[in-house]
Structures are given as structure tokens and as C-alpha cells.
Length: 245
Image 1 (cartoon, rainbow, N blue to C red):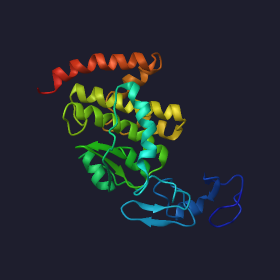
Image 2 (image 1 turned 120 degrees about the vertical axis):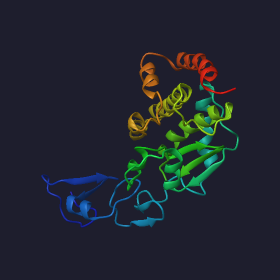
Image 3 (image 1 turned 90 degrees about the vertical axis):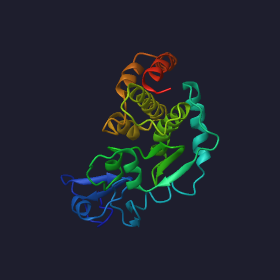
């Protein structure tokens, strides 16, 4: 193996980093600045204001300002419709700086995030709030698809009951957030997005997932149609109990 950065040979017994079908020796990996998106220490790193470094492998292959959002959102409408959710014809997308997006979701004193995984541990990179879908600037397409499904469903559910978002600790909020989160988890299974599926299985922390584990357990033994019926049957009761008239 040849190190992508220093071009020295990496011995079989040596530690190395492997991504993008490239190998990087341990000294190069430890000394180099790494990509905010994928953690790879590329040879052509560029600084992205407000995020960090971006490598040559991620650059130009990300969902970012100026991209045609409708092309990616159209299939999500078809996915969400059988579950009872309607996606707006023209969702309002707002590209939002990382710190603002983080503050929008949690007031907790969190450690600083250097990589996107650090951010995803506590926050959604797509987040519905007060009529807009706020987006983390620069993310992979699978990341956008997975989390957009969660928040498109959350936006529809919030809009039905004139809520700014699905943040809250009532049984209604916890129930609804878990359902929306599971929908994102389900789309990753259908599309084979293994990394995003693992992320949604454990993140975001601090209760953002709602009662996701309930839905994940149910999905092992029930078909989606039965789960939709269960969701609808319980939602009305929770609305009456937890939302003010």
C-alpha cells in the first residue's frame, strides 16, 4: 500500500486510514487537517467558512446552495404519501449556519463539533422550524435524503396543529417525533444507506428521536400498513390530551 499523502509504503503491520479507495499512513492521518464531511485528510483541502476543511473527494458532490432541490424531493413525496404525509409543492429551504442550526434545536452546553458526525450526534442537519426547512450547508446526498424525510414528515405534522416544530416533551411530541424519525430510518433501509441508517439508529441524542425505539421494534414484526393504522389511531387521542384547543 502507498500512502496517498506522503507516497511512502505502508507496511502490512502498520496502522493506516482507508477511505475513497485511498490509504493514508498513521503519521499523515494524525498530522493533517481532515475533511469536515468525511474525515479524510486529502491533498487538496479547502476551507469552508463556518464548517471547516473540505477534501477533493467531497467537493462538488454535495447538496449545497444553488442545487436543484426539487429533483431530490420529488421521490420523497411518493415515499411519504402512503404514510399519510403531504410534502409542500414548494418547501421553503433555508441554508443555515451550523451554530444557528444547533441553537435552534438544543440549548444544551455541548462540546464543539469538528466533524459532521460530531454535529449529527446531537442535531439534525435538516430541521423544520416555523414554516421553513433549515439545512446545514454542505452535506452528502444520502444524508440529505435520510434527514429530509424525517423533517418533511415533522413539518407536515407540525403544520396540521399550528406548531412551530415538533420540539417538546409532551406524549404527543415524543410520539410524533419517534414516528417521523422512524420514517427516515426506513428510507435508509430501502435505499441501502447503511451509514445513515446507523446514524439514525443512535443519533441525535438528548431526546430528539422521540419514541423511535417503539417504532423500530414494531417494524420488525409489522408491515407498514399496520403501523400507519396504529399511528393514526393513537394520534387523535394524544392531540386531545396534550394540545390546547
